[in-house]
Image (cartoon, rainbow, N blue to C red; front, side, top):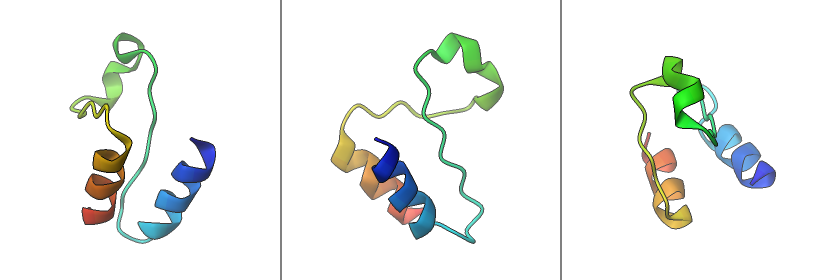
Length: 50
């Protein structure tokens, strides 16, 4: 996951996108609203389109 996150961070550099991975949604309510994505390919597609 770390290498994927780094790749997507570099891909979106300068676009104002912040990638945050959460494992406990209740503990990170300050990031709301967020979208939960269970599929890796959908995740990559959504980030690249940002």
